[in-house]
Amino acid sequence: MLRVEDLLFVHPGQPTEYSFSFIAEAGEVTAISGPSGSGKSTLLDLIAGFLEPRSGRITLDDIQLVPLQPEERPISLLLQSESLFEHLSAGRNIALGLPPRTSKDTTRQKVGQALAEVGLSGVEHQIAATLSGGQKQRVALARTLLRNRPVLLLDEPFSALDDETRQTIRDLVKTLTIRHRWHTILVSHHADDVEQLAQRRYRIEAGRLELY
Ligand SMILES: Nc1ncnc2c1ncn2[C@@H]1O[C@H](COP(=O)(O)OP(=O)(O)OP(=O)(O)O)[C@@H](O)[C@H]1O
Ligand SMILES: [Mg+2]
Image 1: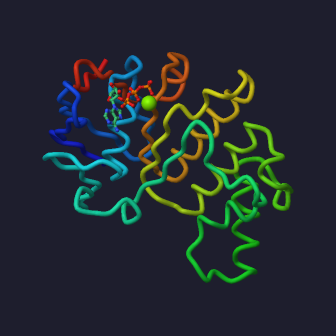
Image 2: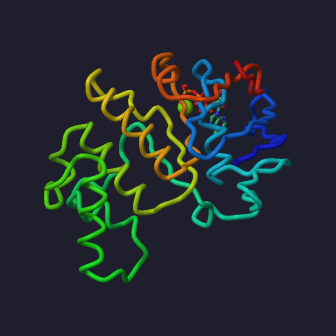
């Protein structure tokens, strides 16, 4: 279980005092919604370690995450776009999820498996810039698979996609979350994303998270 307890934060020069508490279970999607500017991305940045809280705890099972640097945290992050290196092939982008000095054979095999899992077998050598928006998001998910981190943070990951692609990727996030026991935290404005995906739903009201 991922447990966020009394995480206090204030942006310099801003009036809102955030005090975040919530839990996210393994194998479940936990949704965070709230109006623009309510602090959703701020919350994800605190969990990812890009912002430092004044106090509070973030615990994954028994590990304290707050003292860890962003790259040390067991977390993957998927944004609305810009997650890929456009000039690299899909395969090279995915291979960035593997530890350094992974052998060529292992890399080829793991990249192939991850692409199959997101339904994109065969695009290894295609340059990322030439993929569609939905394909890019699936390549980013394939990289997440190879990173194999137990927490997945999604900030409006489906916003740039048409309805059909959106549905495909939504289903994929749900399947992968269950299969790999990820703690997936989804920030979305869209009620239908939240309804279809989330087992637990929170809304940010006045700097706090309310279950609904
Ligand atoms: N680096 C920063 N310095 C100061 N204020 C910031 C900073 N980043 C965000 N804010 C402010 O904090 C508030 C919350 O921003 P945040 O990006 O978390 O909102 P959000 O809920 O993700 O909004 P959106 O739905 O538009 O993405 C906003 O008022 C924003 O202006
Ligand atoms: Mg945001």
